[in-house]
Image 1 (tube, rainbow, N blue to C red):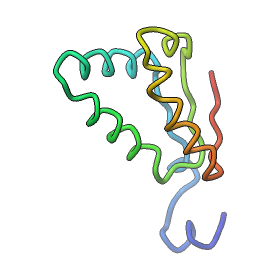
Image 2 (image 1 turned 45 degrees about the vertical axis):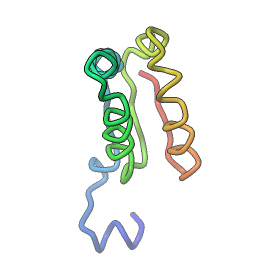
Image 3 (image 1 turned 30 degrees about the vertical axis):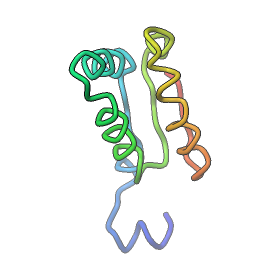
Length: 88
């Protein structure tokens, strides 16, 4: 545990974000239909902000409807900050 996490009283389980790719896909499609795609991307970016690891379940959903292309820049940003992405 690093000093910042200790002083901010963060627990190791708070560092990991678990996401269902099916849910991401459905939310992405909804955002395209109602014109809130940019808000969807920003909400997703905020979810990744203070995490160290992301677990993506059922990653084959990312190959559908262009959601993978939309999320790839966010995942690259996350990895550049030192985060890791795990596909489950």
